[in-house]
Image (cartoon, rainbow, N blue to C red; front, side):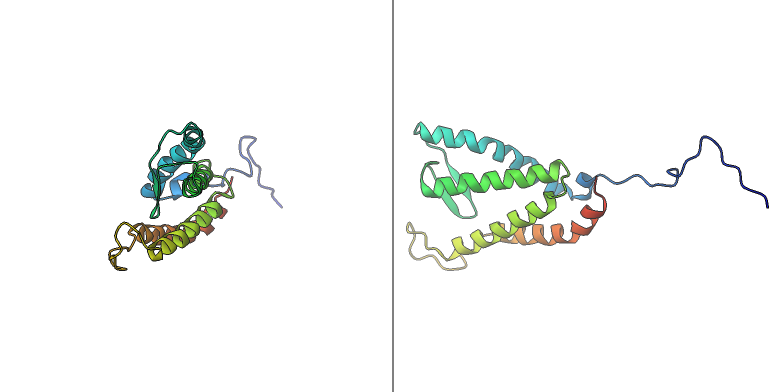
Length: 159
């Protein structure tokens, strides 16, 4: 029997395909929003400090609004921006937990968005449901569907 001779330059790793980076699995619009929320999450502690010095800061997300970061609504918004920043970091740094954190962030956003649609705005008491419908809810649902479909691919292309 003739044995096949192998070159000293070949290895068992020659047929391994390069792993696609996780960041490039994400669509361009999720990457763009990740950068924005990474910045917002990094600024959140400084906004809280500004609130301690009674500097008014306009905060708004998912129908919640506040000009005082130290108020209950302002603190909730700061926490939401921090959660979004952590999720954006997980996606940007291609962490194993990044996609799960982004899914949790999206689900939290959907819940808050739905709740904020049914809480009446006291500045205009004649608002109907159609006028109070949040368009970011549509974007959040698309975001969640896209992340859910990418989850297996994200896990398979792990570092």
